[in-house]
Image (tube, rainbow, N blue to C red; front, top):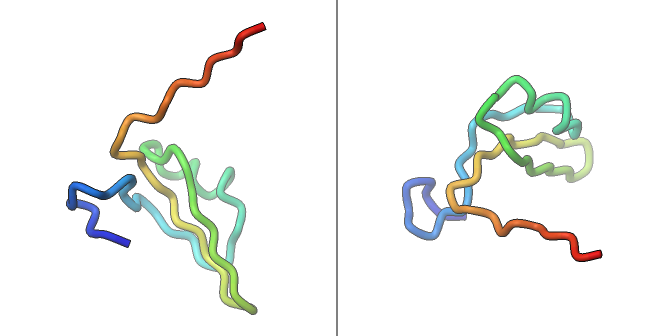
Length: 63
């Protein structure tokens, strides 16, 4: 982990949901979120809604 303001940061946390692993539903509450991270260990689980800080490579399809 690095500070969100650091030059090595890939993403910024824009939201958190405890006791959930459903990023598709939970992160809809955060319009800036474009990905999520889930954590689970034993009965402890949460997810972080993330906003990318760096451009992601474009996926291309070559038939």
